[in-house]
Image (cartoon, rainbow, N blue to C red; front, side, top):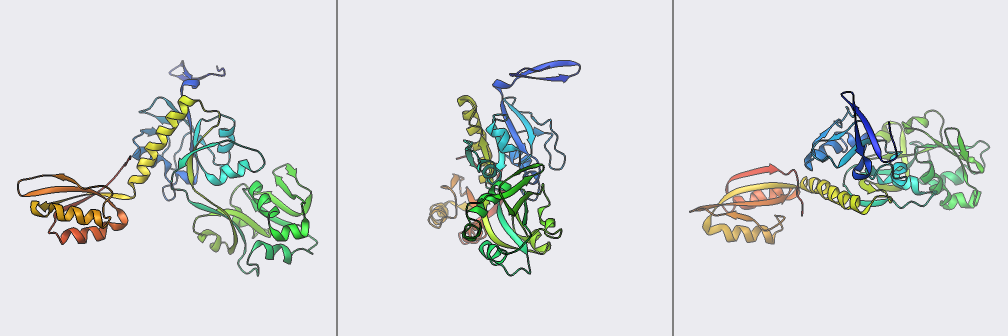
Length: 348
């Protein structure tokens, strides 16, 4: 049973109506952005203070619960379809890579609101060819293949960005002018230049070279998987990372809530860059050690001092990259009982 404003869920043989107009609908990414080695969005929400059930990496459910915030209704979303759902107001906010947002906006104007970057899921969208190919860039490739009798085949999950990038290439324009590459997404086709064909791959893109494709457009973090597949990069189309995005259809009230969620997530991400360090120091050295840490930028803020009769405890936030230098420095001031803790959240 359902209407436009209510979602009805059957629980213990009774129907509970949830007024979706009062809830903020959150899209949580399925796939690599919830992978322990790449992003682990589940852990990000946990570190940000949310109790999440049904979204553990590798065991995601389409029924996700935010147990300690009943104003949020969460759904699992595929990266490829998330921008579509945002643009149509099917979700209010979602975490998705910028590459997919740009793929959706190539052929139509979209007003998706970027609430902020989340500093993970970093990737590059690249053009790759077999490693023994003589081409150093895409222009070399097009010029070398301009007289061939068979179509150039490119497989990708990003047909819109690929077509745009090809058409902006200097050599493509020299050879084909304004002709639009032939694009096929399953049974749908578009474009009049059948000598350059861009075909949707639906994943595992790198294997298409072994099957006879001339080149691919794919995302990569380090390029290691491409090299293992016997490929080399010849162009970078764009750099991308995960962000929190909002639908242009979101209400002002929900947008304020969305901004609060972003700040919570950002606090968890920022915290990963610091250690929480405590140590004891003789009272007559407090000023010297404090000034040294501040002047040498070995702490995020001014040290917090808990005074004692002869010794005091100093508490500082240290950028992880500077922790070894900081420890060596405070030992020079005869610091003792140095304790290092991980931070879960740092909200400025």
